[in-house]
Image (cartoon, rainbow, N blue to C red; front, side, top):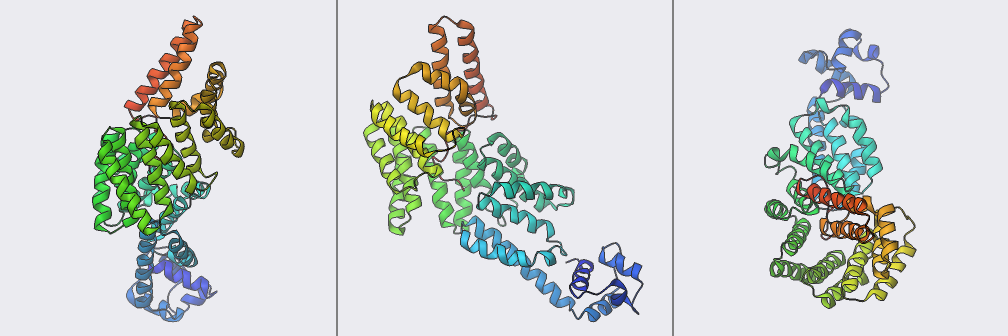
Length: 428
């Protein structure tokens, strides 16, 4: 606790001037230095100033400790995904903001507020506050620097800028174990990030670390999410039995707990499992079940539509895929969004209009291929464009798109791009 800043806080709160507070105790210059932590007051002077303000050093110290405990509880609540409780604590802490800014918790308070904005997916508030806080980064403690880098990693992961996310998370990997009793979610987000980058073995490695930490803290909801990440990674590497066993367990738990969100995720990922196995009938059935309980027009809803459309096209049910995709396109107003463009690509693919598909891919789809589609799907479309030009004997254009495909693959291999399709597993 910075007692000088606390004295300043109470003096301002009581509408006292420096002259009124220090009269007969010390000079105004001396008080100014105390309040600004330029000079440490002797105990007698300090006690006289506190007596005049009618405050107790012991009580102020106790209040500071209680606020630190509330701050720690605030972060823990967010890690446990208790948004309602986190909102209550957020409002309580905001009422104490001016006082907290007089303590050594000033930067930690602002960093934990950043985590709250991420919980709400309020990225504009996060970006604004992050810019303001960054000015003081040189004053951060080692722990605060760790939290800063972690939050930047989480933020860039949430806005789908995965290379930047990996850069920030990699910076503090050595500190993750040191601080895991304070911050339990590092390995969880690291695992999710490697999953997006198609680094399945690394994702599994960090998922097991995350599972250990969450089991130690009895964070049951996050344990479920880690298991979903594990299941999806096992599916990608062809360990279908392991993936299905985990998903069946989660689905059973979701039914017992009447947790519709976890249920819809499990059903979606079972659809994905059967799709990877080439069992389109079962895949379509599970995707359909997931859609029935998802909130319509939500991001997750469109992800399942895209996945189900892929399965329908693979099964030769193009007309059914087109009907479903058209409904999704009609309800999506942002024609420049990655979700809309992905649905449009699938619609044109289902329609069998090669020229229209390739034209749209070139004019609208290349950025989506680079930043939002899996390497497998991205390379499929790039190869399609190259083949189209090769058939027309436009070998220069064909070679151009083959080079883009090769670069797309290299980006995936060297960590600078190519995320997988989003929300195969829940990441929050």
